[in-house]
Amino acid sequence: MRYDRMARDLDIDLTDLREEMMFASDRPGDLMKVNMSAEDAESWLGVTPPDLSLTARSHGPDWIYTYMRGFYRDPGTATGWNNTLFPNVAMPHILYEWQGLRSANFEVASNGAKSLAGFDQISPGSMNAEEYDGAMRDLTNFMVYLAEPAKLVRYKIGIWVMVFMLVFIGLAYALKKEYWRDVH
Image (cartoon, rainbow, N blue to C red; front, side, top):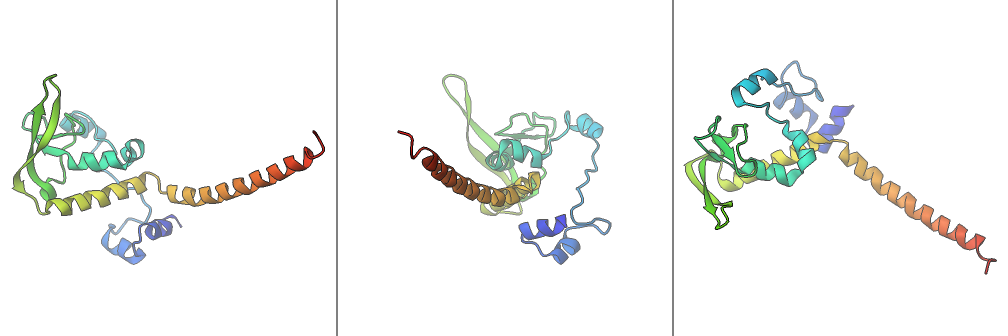
């Protein structure tokens, strides 16, 4: 079953998965449902927020990790938040209670380009910086896994394909030597 493999891949006990991480009507392997409709999201935020698990697949884990750590307070935006990696992002910082409120300091170069100089912590969150970074690392890895769970299986199959190709190349080379042995 699909959820058995998922629980094994994530090293989660199946009973814990059912009891601690799911609602009563859910089954392991069901897709998560979003309560916000695309129309509501567009009217509230200006655009529909992206599915970060799919973004993890297209941009990669480093991008997602940096994005999740790059939020800061910006009263000039519609949501009150901005991001150093994705300026003027429409997504609010939903994990601000963990990270706390912070503002960004930018340096302006002689050519007019802005670069991040650092952050000022306005108020602390429920996690310190190391705990928040660890939580974002775990969340990023989980989103990368959700984006393509078959990747682990593909890697295992890929090793066997490479072994087969090496054996096949060896046999093809031996056959070539045998055919061309008498030709000078």
